[in-house]
Image 1: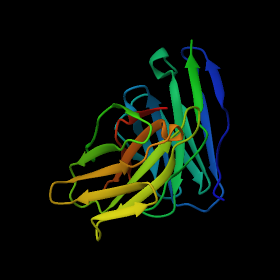
Image 2 (image 1 turned 180 degrees about the horizontal axis):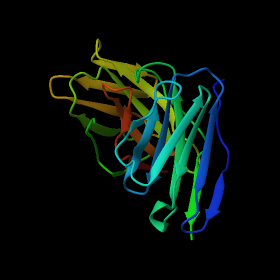
Image 3 (image 1 turned 45 degrees about the vertical axis):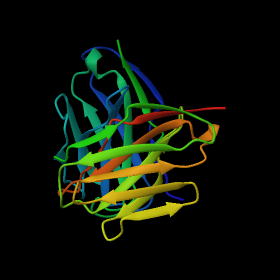
Image 4 (image 1 turned 135 degrees about the vertical axis):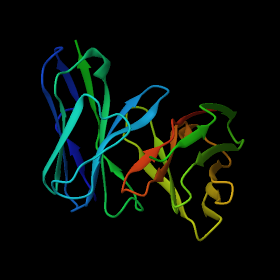
Length: 113
Length: 111
C-alpha cells in the first residue's frame, strides 16, 4: 500500500512566519506534487518535482518555494505566510511521468492569522 | 500548462439515476485521463482512468469515455447510490511531468 504522509493535519501560523509543510512517500515515486485546494477552485498546482533536487513551477508558485533533497521527501515552504494562503494543502506522488495514478496525502489545513 | 475545464460544478440526482461529468482539455499530447473521487474530509482517490488507445472503459457502475478529436472525456455513473455523493475531479497530465486537475464536481445523490 502506497503511503503519502503529510507532517501535520492542522496548522495555525501567524502572518509573516516562515512555514514548512512536509510530505513523505514510501514507494520510491519519482514525481511529487503540491496542490492547494480551495472551494470552487479545485486542486491548483503550486510546484512539482520529477527528481531529487529538481523542481518546476505550477500555476500558482508566488509566495511559495519547495525543496527536494531526498527522493521520498518534498517540502513546501511559505516564505512569509499571509492570510490569503489560508487553505488546504495536498501533497501527491506518482510513479512515472504523469501517466500513472497519483496518490495523495491526507492534507494539511493551514490557517494564517 | 494544461488547461482543464470541468462541468458541471454541482450535480444533484435522485438515487438510481445516472450522472455524467465532462472534462475538456487543451493539450493534444495527453494520452492518460483519470478521474478521482474525494469524499468529505478525505483525500482524493483514483476511481477510473483511460488511456488514449481506447474510447471507453467500464468498471461496474462507472465508466469513462474519451473523444480525443474533441479533446474531452466524461465520467458516467449509473444506478447512483448515496455513497456516490462526493466531489469528483478529472485530471490531465501535461508534457512536463505535471498533473493538472479540473475544478471539481460536487455530486449529491438524494435517497
